Length: 259
Image (cartoon, rainbow, N blue to C red):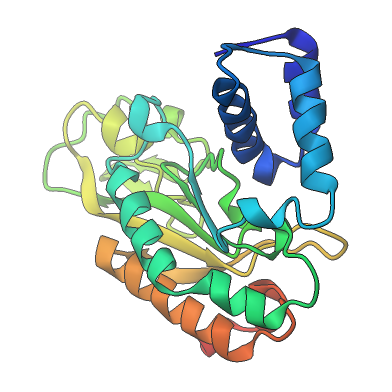
């Protein structure tokens, strides 16, 4: 699909959390007309339809699962690919009946900001912005010190963006209070002195933007694939039990102890 420059610029003005969805919808709209070029008129026509009464509601499915492109070859991607996790979370979300729940709770038309959002990132750079969604998932790889001799090359020290690795006579020391489990030190170590202790996912709950923004609260530890799915299920159960009138998950979740 070819986009005119002014059409592309117009779509970029849409809020980031719906931009990908809007772009896909515009292309479908144009394709249905038998064309392969998106013009500014197409964008304006669809915008008018969305902003009319009830126009947006037909596009809402009650939840949104998004991910970065790490699994497609990003050099910063941690050992795990999130592609299967995205599919499995989508299955869990679809079976939870969030759309029906929202329709029963929200007075008036549903909007995109009512949707329950999960964002997944394949590294701590977090391009998919998991810190500001209802549930944020970040791939993680924790390092460990092995019995392999360290040659004191300082590759691990140089490559760590967080300055979490220092070098002593005995070899590398990792400060886990600073470590973001990005996996760079293990990849950079030429001797295997630093190796992977555990791979999995960090999880953040209750992030949001809007008038009163808040970063998600991080759950201690590293979750497995199944652990993430179990967390999503528990969060959805909590949300449906406590949210009234379409109130966001982050507004009803005050503490991680509630999940």
